[in-house]
Image (cartoon, rainbow, N blue to C red; front, side):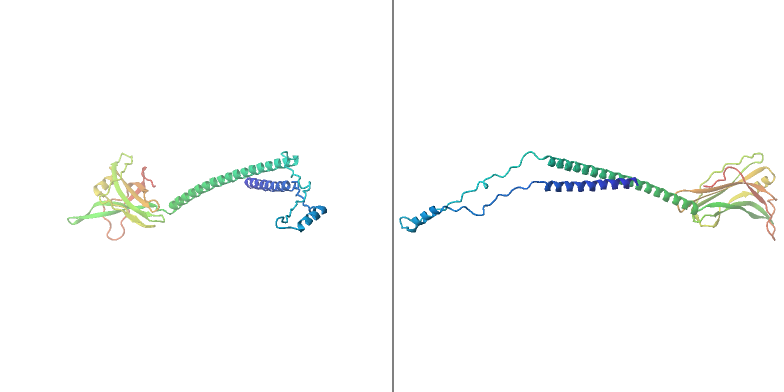
Length: 316
């Protein structure tokens, strides 16, 4: 609002200065005194009658030796015609000097107004450029924030769903015995976009029964280094880890503690360079005799229970 007021005042002063300057110049031109023009004599002076008659009488009889000579006499010049034109005086009237001073002042004022208008225009353009830069940066930040919000809301999220086990039965002679029990974790992508470069691990560690410290698990390299993709709401099984039945029986007899560790690493389509992960560590609790064979008819009774423990239960 202040910028518009300054611009309007500058334009008004500029137009007023130009108008007053034009009026001053026109008034100066009309105030000049008229220059008198030379007066012409309407009737030239005639020669005297006696001279004319005498000349005509002498010229009436002309011979070859005495030809007729005609003399043209110029009329006398009036004294009024010989007056010189008045020369311009070096000294000007006071009114002309005042007009010139006013005109010079108005020209100077117009120059000042024009300079002020130029400065205001430059200042306005500078402020507009600064505002444009600020708006562009704000729009860029808004676009980045919107992209990050979209990535967080729409990206893939992979979590462990549950831990399962299976029984490996071997035949020794005529009897079927359990050789080992293998464990794996089911993982699910609960996000809205696919997860790429999915890689899983499943491990176990044992500690003496008297030790309650949870062991630290470390990621190891797979032999095949294969990856998979996991679409939205799709369940996927991790790699399996097999525990011998002898270790399971030691845990059943309270000689050792068994810990299971599952880890998933994956990427999302919004930021393929960033690796997300989810890990879970549980302690294996045995509910029933793990060496008993499952019934031929009917479901297998519940053998194990899993309790989350330790610091390696993170996601990112």
